[in-house]
Image (cartoon, rainbow, N blue to C red):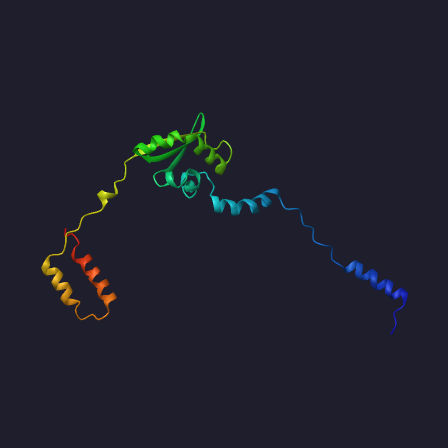
Length: 176
């Protein structure tokens, strides 16, 4: 069966009238494009609006040495701009204040230009690690012999040593 030229023209005209128009899609807003870029960055670096979100980046900003003894507390806003309040123990506070210029530069590199204008350091108590460690009493001779006798039936030497160490730790706890 052959289709005549007139019939073919009628079919094409009918198909043209029945085809749907392509859907009109407006261009995406600039806000959507910016949010696609900023969302992963804000998850990684935080908003930067709070000192708590700054705590994750603190070792990168001030270095390992200062991050061990100092921490950001809060931002305050005054006439001269934003000030970051940092807590540090004793003499370290004056050393951090002496190095405040480079610290402010690094903060503004991470948070944006002129985000922080000044640093205020609040002195805290110095940590004394020796005060937190309590001395334990030694084992009495009767306790040591009782511990060894109870472990005499254990054949595995590694297990025996571990159990003896555990027993010594339990028996030497200070009683309150």
